[in-house]
Image (cartoon, rainbow, N blue to C red; front, top):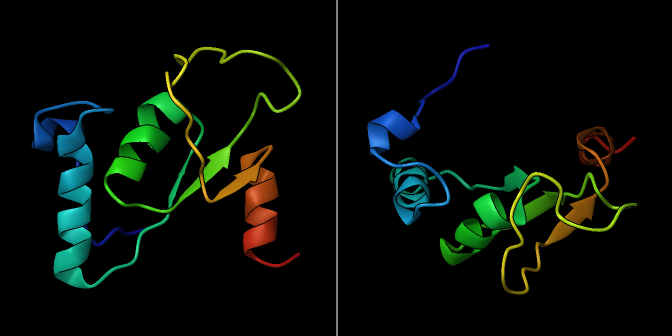
Length: 98
């Protein structure tokens, strides 16, 4: 698979959930006229900063049937992704309409 562009944490000089990572992504998308959909599991590392950057999001809620946050920190505030699926496979199924 070929990618049009790759942005690494090393390129940006920070790791998520730092806003600079999401700013670099949104700037690239704006410049090239792309629409983004952020798909991730961690509310803390992914959805909270993605929401602040104005990105729509899909939460892959792997712990949908268990309490707690698992290996990721509690986001510390309510985060409401646009869509939620219990697994990446369930999201992929929904995305292709099966």
